[in-house]
Length: 256
Image 1: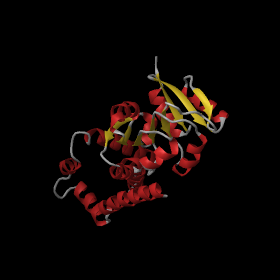
Image 2: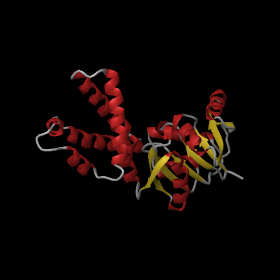
Image 3: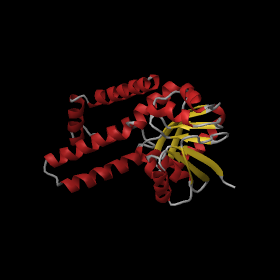
Image 4: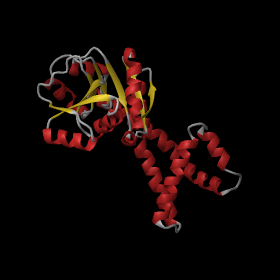
């Protein structure tokens, strides 16, 4: 018999995780609108149990909470009972707040990213150590996982891997625009950039970025000229600042 996992919320992240778990878990999904829950089931392509939020009993259930961080208290107040464990994908919302809002003795915070939709997320985790193995099993269904030692670390990881697809999208688009500016056709620039990112993603799994850079940058060559321009424009410092700003925002959200 399959284990049951219950999603509180029926948005994109809930759908992505449920898609990864559909073959190994029985899925329950809880939301505010039955028509949207039915659409969730149709798009998922497997049968799920659907429930409205108000008065739903979470007693002894394994929850994956996928609501907006600002709605944590409101959603928790509509539920009844005491959950076995809560897995949260809410950016910045602390373990203590989640325990209070959802009435549970155990919480694991997670931070998947956009690539969960294609089972390629880099998901970071922290929280109740007794649920470490179960958390890794669940979130491995949507990509890779990394267990961290503290809530501060997961807030930093949120700024890196959680927000990272937006940073890399900006870089990808800028590189495409640079090529078009020099005379490359737009569709060629898009195709070449996609291939660049796919190949780099494989290389960086086993080779340190500094070594990759050194391997392609010959003295006085084209890469050295382009790399020098990036340093002159402060791209390295801007990336470091982006992680800092996003981290501080995660902390701010958690204390709101």
